[in-house]
Amino acid sequence: MALPYDPLNYENLARSVVAALLERPATPLPPDTPFDGNGVYAIYYTGSLPCYAAVSSSRLLVPIYVGKAVPAGGRKGGGEGDRGAALFRRLAEHAKSISQTENLRLTDFRCRHLVVVPVWITLAERFLIDHFRPVWNTCLDGFGNHDPGKGRKDMKRPRWDTLHPGRDWAARLKADESPSALEETVRRHVAGSIPPGW
Image 1: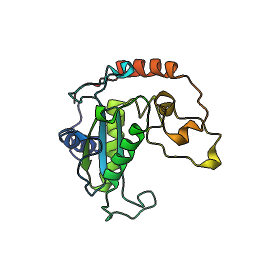
Image 2 (image 1 turned 45 degrees about the vertical axis):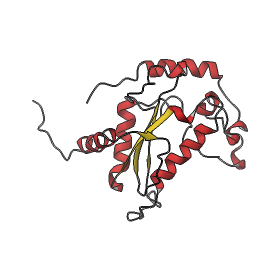
Image 3 (image 1 turned 180 degrees about the vertical axis):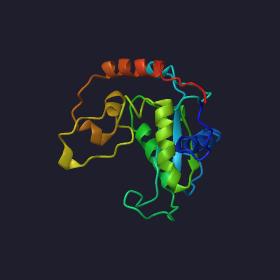
């Protein structure tokens, strides 16, 4: 026997936030006009790198990366009233990372973003990752990383920086895998990453 539909079920609430995000018009990365607020976002690739062929599309169906920007102090409590410009700043940071690479062009990226009441942000991000399995969130980690600092110089270079070199801090870290091996890993992942509809 099927359970009755509950609009306040966490999955249904997350789905409604994600649906609102996906209905937003796409913008350049970062958006042309700064804005205030925290929330969730999806980044799309429209370029011609062969390893991303299965998800690269001007129709923006499958994000290459999704993320969130939460209020300052969100991990420690408080910050509920802090609007700030965290979401815009996060998108600008991602644009900078892409611009620093040797093999990606910022003009090949678009994004959608949605300012969200803070309590629903993490729930929506988790749903986006589980549903789309974006390649830069799952098998090619490291895109959202920051410089770990000199005290952690023995860390491995993130997979994202191995395939897309250019960030100065990542070049100081030792790569564990070859770019060609990662290209094949990515190709296999994105070939199976077209999710079912809603």
